[in-house]
Length: 116
Image (cartoon, rainbow, N blue to C red; front, side, top):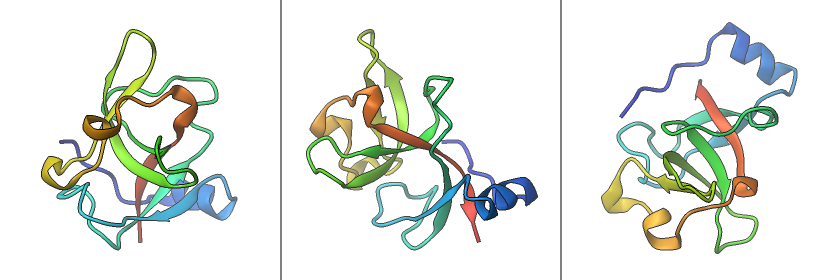
């Protein structure tokens, strides 16, 4: 498990300029890294020019629940360029172990920092 930095001045300015969006953590799937109620900033433009990487924490569309976002860590990139997403708390996470790998198009953005 890696740490997630707190919001710094440049991330805060990106948020003020609407280049980052806030999301609130729900549930226990990302414990101990992120707790329910914490807020994070998301860069929804992070993957316009680069591909998501193993270890990054991302916001993705749930593959079985339309219009439902999930926050998970990229665990693996498969040869067909799909992504295996896991929660930090495997006992409490609904992730790729249940719904399978996700397409690149379902990865919406990268978590950049804790907010607040």
